[in-house]
Image 1 (cartoon, rainbow, N blue to C red):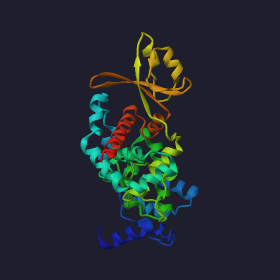
Image 2: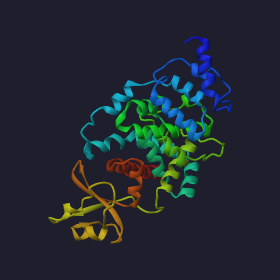
Image 3: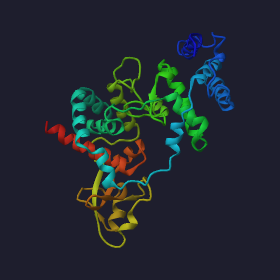
Image 4: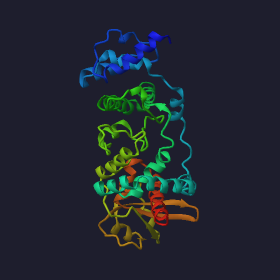
Length: 339
């Protein structure tokens, strides 16, 4: 790329964010790339121009710089590995190093975490655990340009193209709202962003400017990341002061009938008790719960996922993910109290 092409690319991608969209006549002449002449991109640009007020020239220039990444297609198309049992999944996230770093992160940001807990009702240890599980407290937030990831999946991965096309639209809108260069933001191969790994739609719906500086930065600003996780959990129905899960005991031939087929709480405590489930925790018979079994290191474990457990699964649709977050949170609380 020669210096003039570089200059054109820079001006093109910055024009709209700086309020200069439409003032540049050469935007459509940007350096040719995978998406510059794509009919899908042309259709998408027309939609963004018609429905959301973007400048077509600016978007065409932007997509001329977007890169199709085969590594992203390989990652998302790779046959799913056999799901690990809990006894193998848990040690990935429950480690001495993750607990120690979490305690340090908590201590470093204790005032922000206390404010988030007070304003949103979400315990500090749960917020820290989410960030710890997602990115090791910001240590691994992803290396792909978000524009490349979402463009690749929106235009070259038909099985989920509608979803990623929506996320690409949300990403462009958040870039405009936050006045940031969309080519500067990085994330995972699926377009998840920042310390809490928000998809663009979640960013626009739940991320907050928790330090009041006029910009939401979940990439390198732990204050905004903490507030945004707390905001997400509150908006999804977190119940302050309530537990997350309860260890259960089962007996009788009907106990297996109580296992939930998915994540949704399809039974209440009373119905499960009638099938042979019990817990030492005082749970109301009418409380909806998700009953599940895990293959633990010492045999099968039976658990009742309470309403706050279901909230964690809204962050990641996995029972084992929610259990890892919950148990890491409990261990962080114990370690924090001992230091």
